Length: 212
Image (spheres, rainbow, N blue to C red):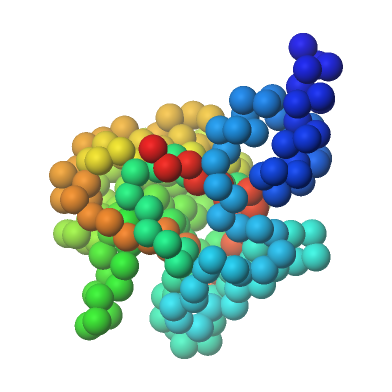
């Protein structure tokens, strides 16, 4: 009941680093299931930038990623590798452009990009669909009905589940991708927030990951 939720959520703040306002809106089970907080809302500890993108944290704890001046794509990467996991994050796009989150990603010594990507962007840009850098093609494209799930210019919630070769995504609670891809299943690497070289501005918050 409501009393149980409030009683359990408030102490949890001290152990997980979640903001009190977030925990009060969640059940005890929800707070537990969010897993590790990858972005702390204060700075970019635990992240590494590859490229010249502008990555800043606002006083309200929002991560902002914007294109740099080189015209080349940048990546804001976790410093740790993650293979099998459930990832959730909220994002809002202010300046439309190509973006996404690479999973099991890395860049080799010759500058080659590896991994898979949960695609993101404005309507028509395959939000929640999957791109593979193994063969550089879309391996799951959203349909017209799924494209309508995106709330353009507003906060959206993406959930990603990776278990071996099984890849699943949900956008705002609605299922998008549910595929098996063996080449991507064999990879291991980092999470990489893509920042296109062309004009783009993305807001991020509540980035959590639970290993499975």
